[in-house]
Image 1 (cartoon, helix red, strand yellow):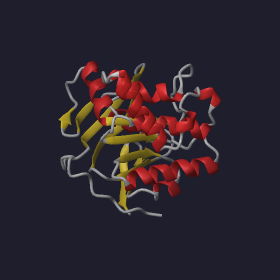
Image 2 (cartoon, one colour):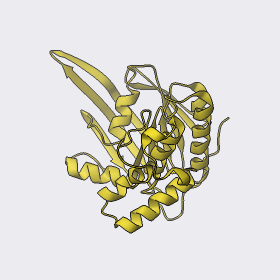
Image 3 (cartoon, one colour):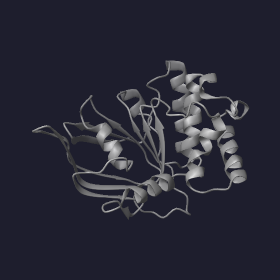
Image 4 (cartoon, helix red, strand yellow):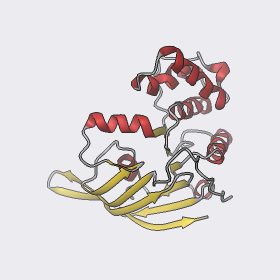
Amino acid sequence: MAREARCPSAARPRVPVVDADGITKVYAMGEIKVNALAGISLRIMPGEYATLMGASGSGKSTALSILGCLDRPTSGSYSLMGKPVEGMDDRELAGLRNKFLGFVFQTFNLLPRTSAVQNVELPLVYAGVKRADRREAAMAMLERVGLASRAFHRPNQLSGGERQRVAIARALVTDPALILADEPTGNLDSRTGQSILELFDELHDEGKTILMVTHDDGIARRGTRAIRISDGRIESDTSF
């Protein structure tokens, strides 16, 4: 079911969260050049719940990596929350990611030897937040995703759905401008996946901006906008 876009918080400036223009990405494989992206232009405003769709090799994962400041485009311009990304060094990009972005991956990407609450604290450690304050914030986020009672369990003591909820809590703990989710239900059974999607619905209802990679048309229609990529180009961009 399509969902209505929510108005962003008045405290957050009304600038595009994502503003990409003519983004290309060329990979060199020996003497062969692969055009992963061939001039993508995309703008996402605060409060949108957008999905990025496409077949394997279409360029959607490359696009997500560039929009998440994990990779650099070959050409084109990109601003995140009004801040031009071109010319930033690796340290500046890391700071931008930690301040504005929250990541949720298909494989959870949790540290195996640390507790759930320590995993959630990690972005705050990088941000230099004091120990007591980051523990309080991490516990609040675990409470938000329904896992406060599992805060001191390690990932191998949690189910797949619980691990993904920890990953979502970690993504939320810095109050990011944008949540980037890469097939967040891909490693979950259908019932658990449904509960995770309902959590994303709730986050959108609260005003969060979301960009989710998915291959599922049903999941795409849960958002307010579905963007389809084919051969490194945007094939369609549909609002619901």
